[in-house]
Image 1 (tube, rainbow, N blue to C red):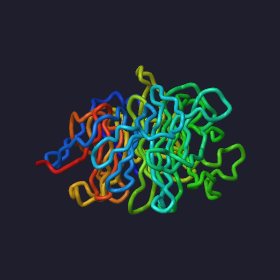
Image 2: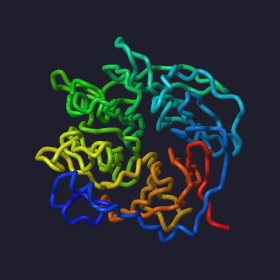
Image 3: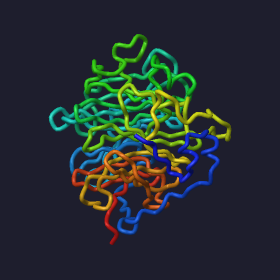
Length: 378
């Protein structure tokens, strides 16, 4: 698929260096035509960094607070008592209790999946871990560690950690490069800088692309990623879509393909934070091009396909939080091609997570502000 840029820089489409692309004037994201039709309604306060959210049923919303607490919002009110039994997390900088997802057969088996920055493993430090547990009252029980990323490192950022199931029941999750771009993303012997795929019980599917490759981690599904913090399954095709943070410029949306190399840090449309060049290459044979690029970076977080008839203007689109610019981004699609983008709720805050209620309502978790529902403007 052809890459799309959020800028109108023709030269970037010709594959010139990322330094040149990033030096172009910033192109503002247009306001969505439907922006005046909806507003945000506060549901609950008290969760400081609502990293992940999932609905257990029509009344109960579970929210991870990155500091290490799992909170329950019941009938629109935050239950005062946090849920006990959560794993020990390294809650520093970008680390902590991160994403949450339900088993596709949750109604029958009760499994809840969590990602977090954990201390598991023999090496000193921490990395992305995946566990599952069941909820009994206000406590997690039957905890099982499914995946322990390695090797550990003492860096406290780029954990990735988004979780998603596909239509076949496979569990996908991301691990960022853990701040060591020159070692992890292109090395199949390391878990960092990858999208992984496991079975719901933590075992490895034999159909994984590197299952039989010597010295490769069998759980790896794709590699060459920087820090993916958005993941969602396309409701029609079943494909796993992700977005990831670039450095200074070069945030990406990617459709994940088995065994594919997404290039980081060998190719990128971004530069270092100090303005220096990471690489002059934005493309290379054998490496995937992004399906969408943001220059400048928007700091994306959270990702949902919109299929609800509650938002007819957005059906078939994707909504993504922009933490940098404090609004919601709407990506318009034509099938699996991104055709444009626009913004909603300017100044709303750092949209960290997005979840769809069983009735189709969209909910946003906004850093330091709480949980909000998108409703028709009164």
